[in-house]
Image 1 (cartoon, rainbow, N blue to C red):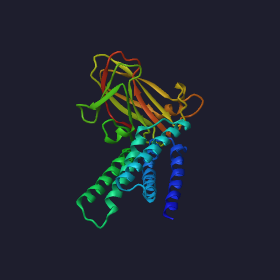
Image 2: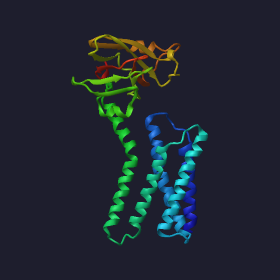
Image 3: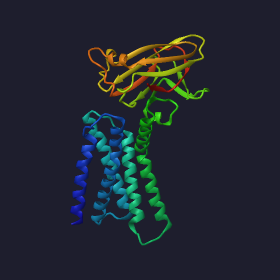
Length: 303
C-alpha cells in the first residue's frame, strides 16, 4: 500500500515538474522567471522524498546505499528535465540544476536527521540546521529580488538610482562599471571602449502616467564635451529603433541638468503611442567609444 502511495506521489510530482519546466509563464518578468526557478525547489524536494521512500520500501536498498541510489536517480531526472526544456526553446540552466541539487540535499539531510527522532544526538540538530541553511540559500535569489522590488516601488518617484542597493537586481552593465562618487547623491559611471557601452535599468516602476517629466543631473570632469544616448521603451516595444524613445544628450564639462518631457516619450514610437503605464527599460549609453569616459550621475526621478 505504501509503495502504491509513493508511486502515485511521484507521478503527481512528475506531471507538476513538466508543467513548471515546460509550461509557459504568465508573464515574462524577472519575478516570474525567478519564481519558476524557485519552483524547482519544492518539486525536487518531493521527488527526492518519493524516490527515497520507494527505494527503501523495496527492501533491497537501505541506509547509505538507498541515499546514494536516490541521489543518482534524482540528479539524472534533473539533467533530463533540463534536456527536455530545450525542446520548448529554453536553454539548459546550471542555476536550475543547482536548485535541484540543493533541494535533494535538503531532503536527505532532513531524512537522516529526523529518522531516529528519539535519539537526542547533537549531530541530528546539526543536520537539521544545515538543511534549513541550504533551503534559505536556495531561496535567497527569490527573496532578494522580492525585497529589492519592494524597495524599488517605495523609492518612487525615483525610477533609477545607481547608488541604491535595490538597483542591483534590475541593473545590467554593458562595457561599463559603477563606483561611489565623491559628491554625495551621485554615482560614478565609467564607460569603457566599445560599440555601445552603457547601463540599463530593467523593469523600473512601470507606471509613469501620473507624471510630466523625467529629471536628472550629470557632472563631468572631462576636458571636452561628449554625448550619451538616453533610451526608454515600454512593454510593447518590438526592438526596432523607431519604436522607442531615443535622445542624444550633450554632456558639457561641469554640471548638466536634463529634463525629459514625458509627452515626447509618449509620442516617440512611430505609428503608436508609448504606454506610459508599462515602461520596461531605461538605458543610458555611448556610441562607438574608442576611449573610456567617466561622469557622475544623480538618481533619475519623475516630476
